Length: 183
Length: 279
Image (tube, rainbow over all chains, first blue to last red; front, side, top):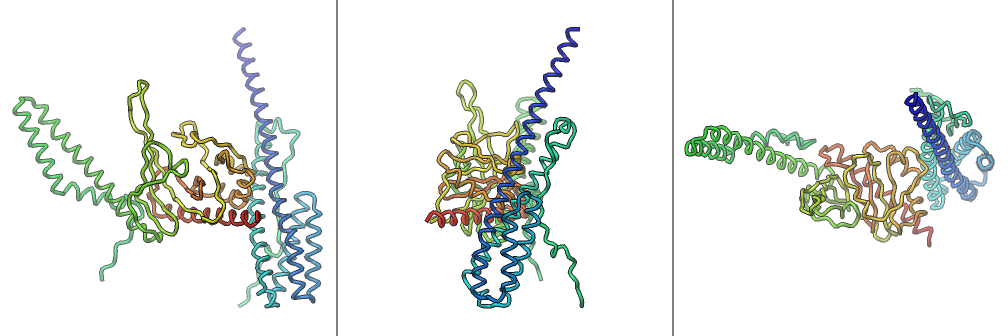
C-alpha cells in the first residue's frame, strides 16, 4: 500500500515537472516568434525609409511618371500603417509590385539608370530585400516550431491559452502568373 | 594520345595501390626475411617452438602496419597536392599555427598539416593535442582533437571583433571544450533553428550590439541551414571557419572553402558598414 502511494506521488511529481517545463517552453517559443517578428519589422522599416529617397531621385529625371510615383507613395503609406502580419503581407506585396514599376520606368530613362544615386539606392534596396526574405524565413521557421510545440500531443493538453500563429507571406501575384510563351 | 589521370576525389582512391606497392617493395621483403629468419634461428637457439610461430606473425603484423601508414601518408599527400590547383590554392605542406583564436591556441601541441594557401585563405587539417595526466601527476597520454580549418585574414583597415565564437551544440560526450579557458558570454539570437544548432559566444570585451549587427538575418539564416554546419571564430582581424574532423573529400572541401569565403565577405561588408556609420 505504501509502495503504491509512493509510486503515485512520484508520478504526480513527474507530471508537475513536465507541465512546468512544457509551459515554459511555450513561453520561450512565443517570445522567440515575437522577437523574430520584430526582426522582420526592422527590415521592412528600412525599406520604407528608402522609398522617399528613391521617389525623389526618379522624380528628378522622370517628372512625367507621376502615376508610378504616386502608386509607390500610396503603397508605402499602406505598408507603414499595416498592423498585423496578414495586413503587412498584403501591403508589402503591393509595395514590392509598385517598386517594380520604378524599375520599369528606369528602363526608359538611361540618364536615370546611369545616375550614381539611383544605382546606390537600387543596390541598397536589393540588399534590404534579401534581408527581408531571410528574416521572413527565420520568422516562419519560428512560427512553425511554436505551432508544432502547442499542437503535438501531449503538449496540446496544456496549450489551451495559446493560439497558432500565422506565417508571414508576401505574395506577389505577378510572380504566380504562368508566363505566356509563343514561338 | 595519353591523357592525364583525373585528380582523386578522396585519399582512399590511391591508398590500395600504395599499400600493394609497399608490400611488394624491397623494404617489406627484407624486413620479412630478417624477421622470419631471425625467429627461426632464435627458436632453434632457445629450443622454443613458440618463437618460431610468434616471431613471423609479429613481423608480418609490423610490415602490414608500416605499409598501411606509408600508403595513408602517400595517398593523402597525392590527394592534397592534386586538390590544391583545383581550388586555386598552393600546397604548403605542414605549417606553423599562431594561436590567435581559442581553437588555434588550444591544447599543448598543435599542427596544421596539408595546408593549402592562396587568396588570403589557408585551408588545412588541424590537430591539437591535450595532455591528460593521471592522479599522481604522471603524464598518461595525449588526446588528439582534429578539425578542418580555413584561416582568413579580414580586411585590415576594418574594425576587428575582439571575440566572436560560433560552436555547434555539444552533446554529453563532446570531447574537449577549448573555449572554457576564455571568459565568454552566451548570446541567443532570434532564430530557433540557429539556437538549436549553435552556441553563440562573445568575449567579455566584445560589444554585444556590434555582434548583433554582424549577425544579420541573412547570415543567421545561412548558418542555420548550411548543410556542413561550420563553426567560426573571429578575433584580432582573423576569421577561422572550422568543421570537426579531417575532411578528405574534394567536393566537401570545395563547398567548405566557398562557405568560408562567403562568411569572410559578409564580415568585411558588415565591418565596413559599421565603420561608415560611426564616421
